[in-house]
Length: 119
Image (cartoon, rainbow, N blue to C red; front, side, top):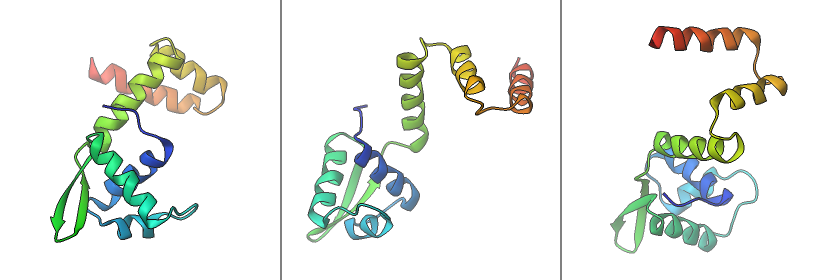
């Protein structure tokens, strides 16, 4: 799975949401910094080249749909981030969020319960 640019990732989130879309549908979902139609079309074709989307052709127009699920991408993204930024340690991830005050004691207790119930 090739790495996506920020704009490609933004487009994938739209395609995951819409499930199937023409370029004009994707363009309508972009709220800020709307690219030109042709630029967006090129980005979507790049996503196709990278193996993230496919399409159904209707004459000269194409309806695009994701072939990589959001879950598969999330798993790859998170694994890469944990490997690159946290020494492949989930403890380091949780410690980071605790130090940044992004996770509460109650949330940590919930995580512990989840882990204990899996065992």
